[in-house]
Image (cartoon, rainbow, N blue to C red):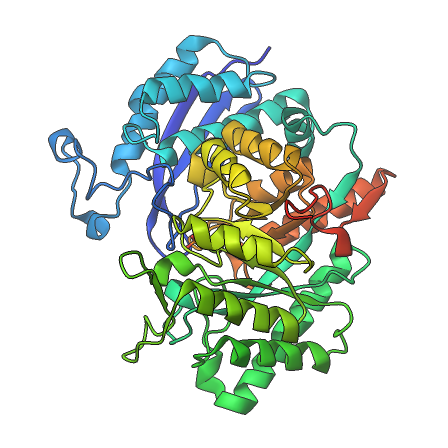
Length: 457
Ligand code: 2PG
Ligand code: MG
């Protein structure tokens, strides 16, 4: 039995230089920390991230609501220090076996359906740090602790295919590219370590290809460490990827992923998608026109995964598109659509809207709720794609959770920048550690979505 002695929170910075919540949990085994990530292309149905500029009671608590342009998180920090922490210490809950009860206690204290009172950023930080404390109490690595939470203890260890976001657009970059993420997935590698090498080599080769075509200034980068050259059309982006992969002789080992993050350029009233939303030139497509563009891309490039092809509430387009992909081996991932929320997953299952769930723990705001959403997705034959946020930290919790859930694939940005490589490096450590222990370790490879069977099969 290991109870919590003390919980404190602090305001720290994320990878975009914005404030975020750090939580520290103290038990008899020591101090355990977690840092909370934050999105830019956030879904409207996500749990609430409390920012001081918008927090109702911030000013009355004497918090400077203008600090960091209103993005401070001192309200959330205060909620950990004054409400969540003392309540969990008093509860006597055991971090070793009661993570679910710890999360439930926080959800009850919040009392809203979307964590609007205490903040998903406050609750998630505590949840993550408690998991770390629990792992230490059991004397096991975090992924082992989480395997028990996930009920995967008897599964083989599967290392995920890393989807490297090497070209950034959308709201993550200053170029005119509408689509947000163009990803390289080394599905033909034989180990995670080899996948990292392919990703790194392709990334550097891409830099050369871009410099040759567009000049050195075009090799500046976006929020997730991918390059952000002055492109407009998605074909231009995929052509650059194709060339970069060819240069390193990796054409038969690499597939592509795409996250247009289309909620960002959808006009719900007109039911139109504007691919020129960052430009002065509008470039509008109907849902049908956009679906045709995706089919064209899937036909001409090795596209294995497509995330958020349509906006978060444009259900009819999702369902029609998924049906139209019945005979194509394409993973269709719901991000803003599902927000790692069991209610949204249930709705999507009933509407046959997609065949995969993006897993972002801060969209729902606690570790065990995120696990429950993933389990529901798996039980419906879907895949689960684990994900970072565009505003990240050096916290590598995601890597352990990905292995524990056996998701078979994750995205954590480019194979560059500290907050991105923290996740990849942790996975390299896990792979090496398991091999050193003599464990059987499988690299998911071309079966990256295999735990799920496509909803439209
Ligand atoms: C996405 C993510 C992460 P953000 O749309 O999938 O890559 O971006 O964190 O800004 O929502
Ligand atoms: Mg997305």
